Amino acid sequence: MCGIIKINRFSENWIILLGNLYLLLVNVLVIGSGGREHALSWKLSQSSKVETVFTAPGNGGTENNVPIDVNDLDGLAEFAQKNNCFTVVGPEDPLAAGIVDKFNKLNLKVFGPSQAAAQLESSKIWAKNFMKRNNIPTARFEIFDDAQKAIEYLKSIDYNVVVKADGLAAGKGVIVCNSDDEAISAIQTILVKKTFGDAGNKIIIEERIDGIEASYIALSDGNVALPMASSQDHKRIFDDDKGPNTGGMGAYSPTPIVTDALAKKIQEEVIEKTIHAMNHEGISFKGFLYAGIMIKDGKPYVLEYNVRMGDPECQPITVRMNFDLYDYFIASVDGTLSSMPLLSWKDQFSVCVVLASNGYPGSYSTNDEITGFDSIPNGTNVFHAGTKKSDGKILSNGGRVLGVTSLGDSLESAINNAYLAIEKINWSNKFCRTDIGKKGLSYF
Ligand code: AMP
Ligand code: GLY
Image (cartoon, rainbow, N blue to C red; front, top):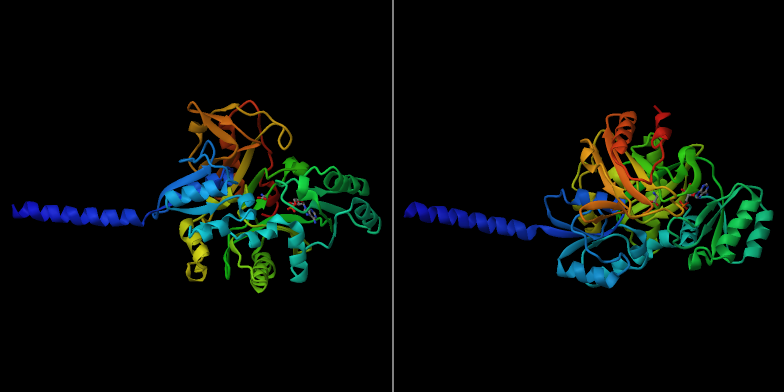
């Protein structure tokens, strides 16, 4: 009898302890539907502190999808409130619309920058003026809202230019020009034809800098910024950086282009300077701060800021993380990053090759069945982007469809692993670049 009572008390204590542990677990809501959000959801679901990761609206690869649009801030807030979620915002649009401010007002915990801080990405003019007044290295520029004046200005300068729409244009509002004729046509596309709508009410004409591009991303809590592993994107649609710009056709990490000395320079002269200058102007920057960098003659120039993780950079960076990402997101929100251990990374290379639908970034077909997921070897993650599930099948549902992401002990082996895995995946309109990571190889 005594023994039975003892066993019951013991079990009771365990039940209470497990119950308490369960109560300590949190739900996470990741907002977005791209490869970046699949990678973030995948990593966050590995945290011992996380119960369920929901993704809104998610894609064919993410679990626990919630059918709420990224711009439906009320719907997202209601879901987060009901399900007691810590929210992670993936893309720029809801950040620019003020989702973080809204959630904060409702006492909902959310990772990402405020609307004021998101101006670094949502207005290229705001960002350029900010860099100019704070001596952050960037290309020289002028701002116009009148096409005729912009064309007259072109005649007064003797260097190639890049014409940029001021507002968010889904990564398409930047036209890199090789001649005055191309620049005039770019001015007309944005200011006269209004191809990007109100995002093109004003333009920037800036000096084109011909150098090597890299992505430098740091995690900030408003005071300190911890650098993520370095990475390099491939923005053009075709091999050897030919053809139009895309959202990104592949990325790898780390990149030998960002040497330790250069990383220190970017960290101090761009990232820390930006965070401190923002504070000085009364804006705290919390979240991922991404500087698109052009390196010329050993000097970094900021081409653009993003106020979020890069896509596809997120995919190769995430698979190298040797830490609990959830802990660092919480520390960013709470302002306690300085007390966290330094980020540690797998001592391996990773490569993400984007599989797109033929025709992207122009028009392309959707609803093609994709096969081969069962044959993917260990060491490779296939992150979904433009996919959806239908009757147990995975169908294409966007321009950038999958991000095949492989690790390897050298950059070369990571590249080989990714391209071997790609052969296993098939659909009728599959397209990818064949040279992702090649630029990095010449540095070894
Ligand atoms: P952004 O969206 O501002 O990063 O621009 C998209 C792409 O355009 C960049 O990744 C670069 O490849 C290119 N670009 C933007 N600004 C410049 C510049 N000043 N000089 C050369 N290329 C640029
Ligand atoms: N990969 C570029 C971007 O995320 O904007």
